[in-house]
Length: 126
Length: 107
Image (cartoon, rainbow over all chains, first blue to last red; front, side, top):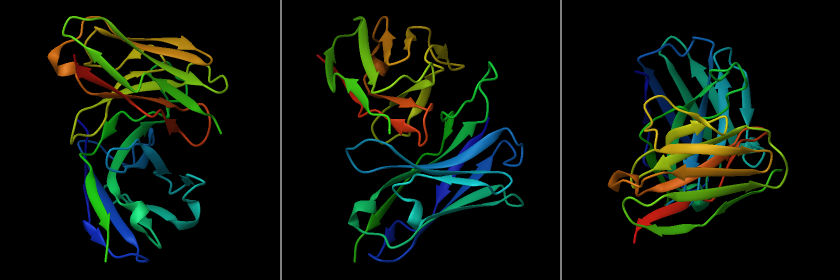
């Protein structure tokens, strides 16, 4: 059973960089069959996809955040990470890491999220 | 960008009821739609992908239908553990996006 666990500071000052890590257990991040994503959810609001990384290091970012986001992978530690720069109060949210199958069970593109971390609250405040 | 309209935003129902939640797209997305359930303080859980394929381990009272622009999540016989918020997500167009959510509350 794959498990994902977010870690990182729960409080970040405005204009600084938010940094989170997702540790994957129960499966290899290098399997090649999945993308690894970050998603966030402000309190009481909906879900926003931030970006994804493939085991090769190739990335895709949400255009709304692209200028501030960097996602990286460390296959030796079975981890991937998120950096979000120049944060403001609007970046306060629960941040989730999640797994995206490359293909679904029928062989079609499967860019949904089948396993999620428990989420970590990041508050941007001075 | 694809606009998603999920309705209703709030649904009051009783245990045993049949409930349906709608997700409408601004343009066709074939069957590239997923549904999630989220309980307070928890991460979303995948219920259905490819519009109608039940994720392993999800009870059969959940079903999904639709293609193109109109999709439906149906819970055939609402159980106490089903009171939660439900989200649709399209993955036809980049970036993947989620509906606004439907909260299913006890009537």
